Image 1 (cartoon, one colour):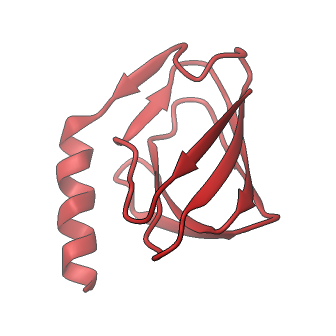
Image 2 (cartoon, rainbow, N blue to C red; image 1 turned 30 degrees about the horizontal axis):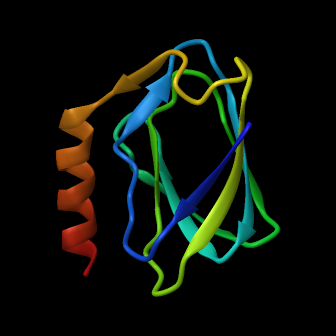
Length: 102
């Protein structure tokens, strides 16, 4: 379990966790989690909400707001770095998708 503070505009790199599930609870603020094989889904999350990300599902939290947000994150392995697989091609795709939406 770890606490993940995200300043305004911060975004994690698109990644998944090999055979590891993730549950994230937003302690404060607002954030968006992009997820899916092509990061095509956008899940807005507000303080008090939680999100479940199954193993092997690409995802990236992004604080699109003007205020900080803070997550409490739990992985089924106990560590947020276990089984992490970065997906640089999807980083480029998410950047393109979000720039088109503006």
